[in-house]
Length: 335
Image (cartoon, rainbow, N blue to C red; front, side, top):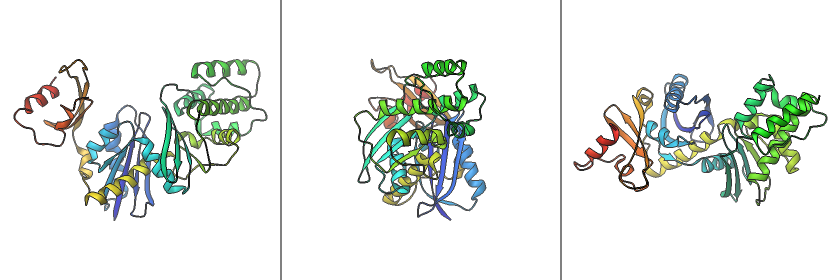
């Protein structure tokens, strides 16, 4: 069976999608990264091989904050940023989509699409308010399973107004409202509305949000957030079936297209899950920039490097080392 892999490695979750030639999802995996991206990538590969032992991978794409790492370990044919991967995925599942709302564990994105092309975007990577991790934290503080958070919000009769511009202020305001005797459902619904206001004020400022609007990322599982977006934008919000792994789905499509262009895949094979891969870092002292160089090593072999501005180290990736370059690589690896 021929298939394509897409991998999205983020700070909170590692997602993998296996698709067929027609982009039908054969397997979708969502696991916690737990600060160990290399381990989580290998675990995902093992899960695919266990479920589909006869699969023949014809193309691989990688995205997410650890996309370079995922690309090196798997031999990805394409390594793309999250904006591109999410836009491709949304356009494939919801033809004609013009706006993508994406909220993950640690960041939020707003992508504007016109005629199938991502024309503008905004990201919030600074404030935790409105991200999945903040909702997880508040659900735990209230003693609610995160899966029930959204359903409780839907039972509200009058959502209370919560200050949502800052995670610290939002939590303080929620505690104040609890102590004032407001119903928990109204507080939870108020928090959802506050986070949506914060999202739209920060990311949607100056942008035309036109429908169809797709809501994806892990927070899209929360019906309270979906309903709050629908009320704020006064339009239907579409949550696609694979909302939680859309980045990986988009990466699989991009990987398939790139493998087709180059006439084959660079996939290392499922033996990659057994690679003895480790990451090492060093500050380069070659100039005043003092770049932080990351090296991915397999035993004595350096698989890839990045982080330099001048290209002195990353230019050595996937190329035979000259006698002049070898000492540089050795110094970097053993620093």
